Image (cartoon, rainbow, N blue to C red):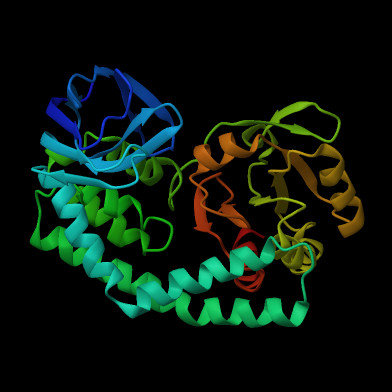
Length: 354
């Protein structure tokens, strides 16, 4: 059990919400909601005593109204300025103040905000019913141009904040937020340097899980999927000693996934008879759409499917396509490797196995 410290939440409505109770809970690092309890609203005021393991995302809820905010241990004075929970002021909480200060720095940098803007535009267009390939390419190029600048900007601010605020409650969360984009060595070294007191919250525990199980050198987590015949299988049961294995996460509705398939198919054809295997894991919820995509794209390798939210949570996948490359001993040697880089790596590594 993680060490816990007190958190006292005091809330005040400026206008009568017309309710006698308000629910308080936590949205943890895996976006799972846990109800902590219910506070009685008396004369538009309420209090709630919680036990905190560090920085967490809390929520207040009554009727259909809900708001999320980050708090660290200590106290938090919350002023609810309207009955819909949309206008809220929080005072007295060091973790909340630190997160605001960090976010303000980050959002003031155009490299970060431009990247967020371009990603939102690209994602929105990919969800459109009618897609013009030229427009899609233009948006993809815009995002690619700003992506590296945005990632490096966030990395720089994160490392600098942790360095200058070594005991800030927010450190585990802001570090977790860059695990998919920052160099692994920076994540591992920075996490190692965090004081033990900051390794108790859900963000720190998930970062530790990622380091042990999903980063380079980790062993692929044991997970069950089903194949095209609804037979339950695990990737680990399919691993063949002495063979490199690419585990690719995709879905029939994922445009970049489908665009990448011909490139991956070319690599598969080139190396499948030479100590390399390919396993695709679909996140489709529509079984027929999944099977039709396999047929349409002529995918000849092992095809598995898993429950969307469970797979994302288990493998900490922020988006697809995503993949993990396992070496001949089943250890992770690369994450999100492109078809081009996969070809180069296999050409070099498989020679050494022959």
